[in-house]
Amino acid sequence: MAGAPDHLFNLRNNFYLGAYQAAINTSDLPNLSPDDAVERDSFVYRSYIALGSYQLVINEIDAAAATPLQAVKLLALYLSSPENKESTILSLKEWLADSTIANNAILRLIAGIIFMHEEDYNEALKHTNAGGTMELHALNVQIFLKMHRSDYAEKQLRIMQQTDEDHTLTQLATAWLNLAVGGSKIQEAYLIFQDFSEKYPMTGLILNGKAVCCMHMGNFDEAETLLLEALNKASLKQRTFFTWYVEQDAKDPETLANLVVCSLHIGKSSSRYLSQLKLSHPDHVLVKRASSAEDNFERAVQSVA
Image (cartoon, rainbow, N blue to C red; front, side):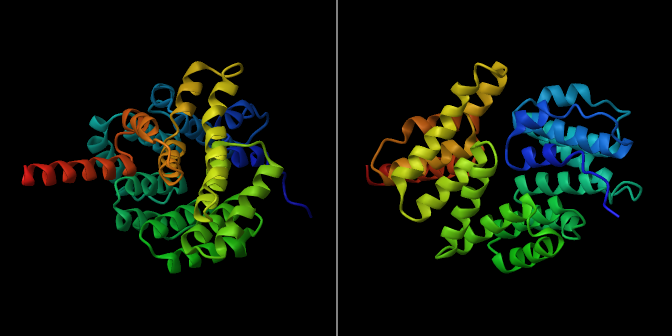
């Protein structure tokens, strides 16, 4: 007997591939079960978060909402302002200590995302390592790669492959691992992103994936073209989407960071991209590294002055 149709497949897939506005636009699905409706709403609100619309999420999710939505609201609060981080993490820890909700998959996922942002990878893994969903396994792959433990990331990927080898998240996780391993695996990663670009509408995530592969292979001119396309998608969308979406898309941190690196390799000025990144995402790792390098240079100059 065939399984029940997956009414949320397209919405999930859009979210996984970075087509956040498309996920929102296709979320009006009739006759969903209560659980599916909550899952639908969690993806919609996470899409708004990905587009930088934190306050909308904070305003719309009230105290009566289901636990997964409350967890998503915590993520919006955490990302909305540096002043909110400490109180949000305290609330998150209180929820995780509550045995009645601590095993909720979305709450565990949000915990993993927040602690990964905090670079507290061991704490993140306390809540994600047990897995249970494809998203949790995919997040584990990302966390282990951040820890430079590709061996553990590969174990998580094998679980995903055994569950559903063709799943979008399995393919993405394969590409992430291939990029980390390097060598001949880079071409395999590129082919995954190329396959996505042929099957689905182009997104910043897909373009950045292809561009990073190109940079690893030394094809910096092609990488620049892909990254500029990702940056220019904002102006193309201006005719159809709200201004707040255009502005957020134009400041995508990974596109800007990759353009900084790419520009340096092809001998072009990267100052404008770095300035945009500093203004829009001052906590980005590339901004921190650049600031640290500038401070070290200033100290060196002063020491010989």
